[in-house]
Amino acid sequence: MTIQLYDLVGEDTSRPFSPHCWKVKMALAHKGLEFQSVPTTFLDVPKVENGFGKTVPIIRDGDIVVSDSFKIALYLDETYPEKPSLFDGEGGKSLSKFVESWCQTMIHPTVSTVAVEEIGNMLGSDDQEYFIPHREGLFGRSLSTVTGEREEWLAEFPNRIKPLGHMLRSQPFFGGESPIFADYIVFGAFQWARICSVKPLLPVDHLVMKWFERCLELHDGLGRKVGAASLVVK
Image 1: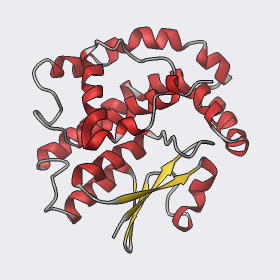
Image 2: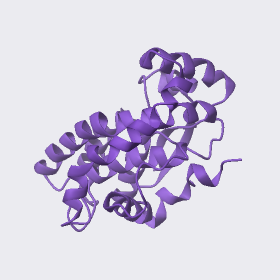
Image 3: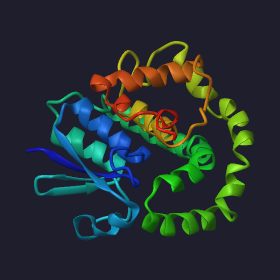
Image 4: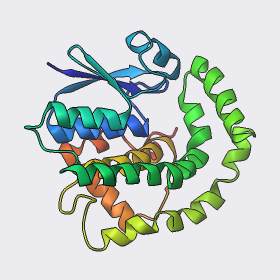
């Protein structure tokens, strides 16, 4: 049975951008599980599965509904143990929990600042009426003011991801020679930036960007099937 993944989109439903949904897509592909993405806007989220969760991703696997990207990954590994593991044991789960916290505190704030106005521009008018005031309330200032600060954030970003660059000097993935869920956590954040913003986070020759390129090619190029923002700017 094909798993359904409720996948966050803007006005263009072919350009899903949520970092958390991308984690799950990569996890499903890693497990070799068939899935169907269900395009879901911000205003659609409260209607998903009769209000099952406040955010996406949410998956339906037969009679089972699961929300939260980490819980979904755990569910997939427990339910389909015969498929390639996302964690390679309890240590991988603990590592991935740390990586999730590190990513949300060190990478997500930069992407949020750099891309927030562009994300707003990707949305339909109804979603914009929700998204723009909500995000301006979180930032405490207008989105155009936030965007004016992004060069400072981009200048600081290489320092924020130094631990990842250092690790990648000796191995190609968090999992060593092959990826695990920890890779997909960080990939989701970089994919979010790639799809939403024309501003690159790092130079193309940076070790982390070379890792990201490897991730884009995983699972028959799943990540590259949605083009970068720079390729669709009018």
